[in-house]
Image (cartoon, rainbow, N blue to C red; front, side):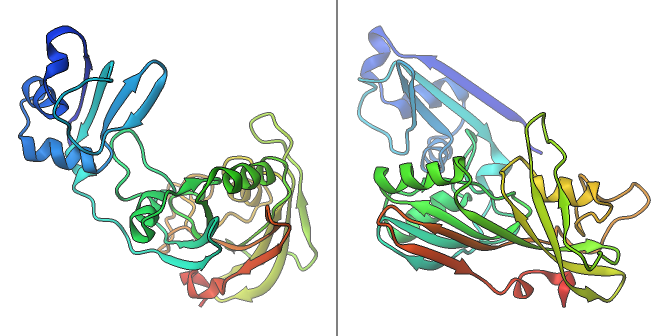
Amino acid sequence: MSDVQEYHLSIDGENTALSPLDLLTECSGLSRSTIKQAMSRGAVWRQRGKKVLPLRRNSNNSEGIEQLHFYYQADILAQVPLPIERLKDLNDYSVWLKPRGMRSQGSRFGDHCALVRVAEQAIDRPCRIVHRLDQDACGLILLAHNKIAARHLSELFAEHRIEKRYHIVVEGDFPEQTQVAEQALDEKPAYSEFTKLKTLDGNRSLVEAHIKTGRKHQVRRHAALLGHPVVGDKRYGESATFQSPYPLQLCAQQLRFCDHREQEQDFRINSQAWLDASR
C-alpha cells in the first residue's frame, strides 16, 4: 500500500481568490496533473457547513468553499475499474451485475472504481446507492436515479420487504432439510434459511440462502455458524492451515419486490456462471 496523505485547508480571506487546484498544489507539493486526476476520481472534497461533496473539477476561485479536503493514496487512484453489466433499466432505477472484487461505493480516497460511479458514467445519469454487496461477492444490485425511487427502495431494504436470495458454495455435505439460523449478529436479530440445491465434487454443496434481515456479512456468518462456511471466505471460514483455491463463492441471485410504481419485479440470474466452485 502506498503512503496515505491527507490535506485539510480552511478557505477564508485572501486564499478565496485562489483556485482549489492552486491551493492543493501549494500545500501538497504534488503535480497539478496528479491533483486534477484525484479530483476527477473522487479524492478531493469541498465542504460548506456540514455539507461535504466531491469536487471533481477545478474552478477559477474557491468562493463558496469553507474547507477543502484531499485524500491521496497513489495505488487507489491508479486502479482500473472492472467491467459491469446493466441487466435492466427501468428509468427511475436500474439493475446491475456487480463483479467480484468491485466495491459497491467508493471511499474518501476515490470512487472511480466503485460500481455506483462506473454506472453513473456509463449511462450519464445520477446513480444513488440503496443497498450494498460485499466487495468479494458478486451478483445483483439496484441503483436509483432519482429521489423518489431512492427513498422507496431504501425503505424496502430497511423494512425487509425485498426478497433476497443468494447462491453460495459451502464446505461439506449440507443437510437435505432446510436449515434455519437465528443467531443474533452484532446484538441484533438475524434470520437466515439455507436450502441445499445439489451436492458438488470435492465435498462441497451448492446452497440457496434466503435472508429476512440484513446484517453485515449475514449469509457468511450464519453459514459458518452452521458448520458449513462459504468456500473462499477468508474471514469466517478458512483456517490458518487451509486456504481455498477459489475466491468467495457468494452470488446475489435474486431480488424480488414491489417498486414505487406498484409493479412487481423479480430479477434472477444464473449463479453457476458466476460461482467458480459450482462447475
